Image (cartoon, rainbow, N blue to C red; front, side, top):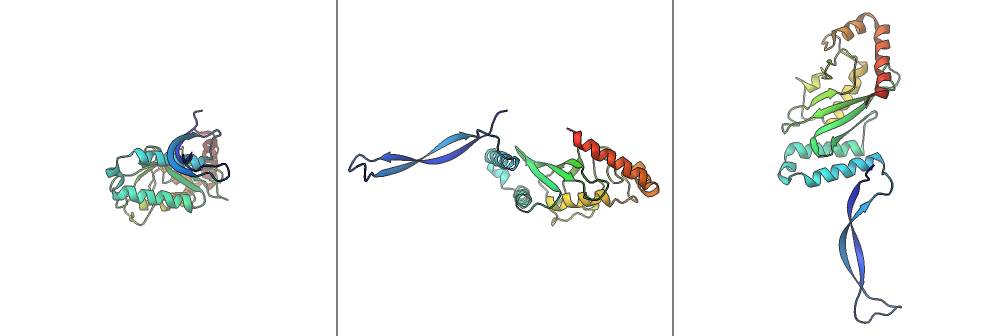
Length: 215
């Protein structure tokens, strides 16, 4: 595995030509940049930070100045500093407009123990318009379509610019154990949830177990 390399700066000590003694050396300093390579793989959160910094460094400045990109940076900072329980998310290495996220199944529910992957695709209209959010993991839920799209009011007609990435992911996590069968995206799951909760929970447990081995 190729280990990440990062640019750092260091002070380099240079002796002056005059009045130098072993007891009282006089030094000047210059700053030089060097490339350091990890000798061990850093923690995953450090890799995310390094990769994101690299991505932002090489993105065109004019694109990084857009309101949507500034807002997404604030969203990412909040997720890093104060992450809600059971969710995580970060932009792809070279595209702040496309995020990967993970939602953990809520405790003490049929979804408990599951790790479900999602993608969020933003446009320059964010936060005035919601992102396109899809589950990558296979799901069985009344409000999740076969392609992973999510039927959730805040991603549609109830969207507001006050919602950020953390709010979106938290709302989706809540939806897992509090579905709306009256607005079904999966008619089989909606019918089973209403008419045969025991079988519905069994199907959910299958999805949870599949999430452990999914790529």
